[in-house]
Amino acid sequence: MEGFDPRTSFGYEESKRYDAVDTRGDEEETVAFLARLAGQRDALEFAVGTGRIALPLMRAGVRVDGIELSQDMVDRMREKRGGHTVGVTIGDKAVREERQRIDLVARKRAGRTFLPAFCRSSSWCVIA
Image (cartoon, rainbow, N blue to C red; front, top):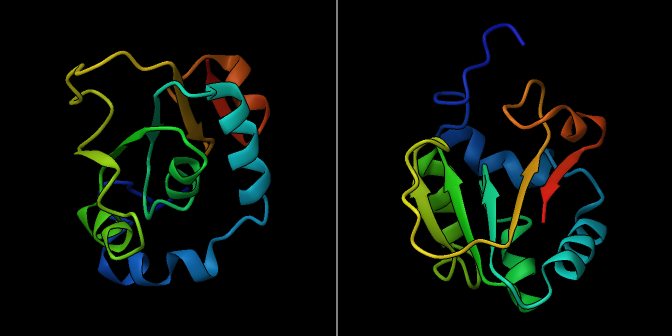
């Protein structure tokens, strides 16, 4: 996408409207799917954003950490019920230090991704 830069495209204004405008409609099914895959194991969500998936996943019994470039998006998550329970690393995927074993990694597919080709065929890429 021309003009799109993930480091700057999710600032304050975008973070305020994100959950109202950018819902996909499959959040419940996505959380149920990821919860089944994770079981009671830990999960890591790339681009955790406002916690639209991470927070209900935590309520389903999965401990979730996230990685997010935008502090504004994380600030919106922190305003929500349970928003302070998700451990978040601010930065890209390269900055996270391994703190514990992660059993499930999930990332919403958006354009080109650094993950293997099999991840590009659906809207979510999951490595379990």
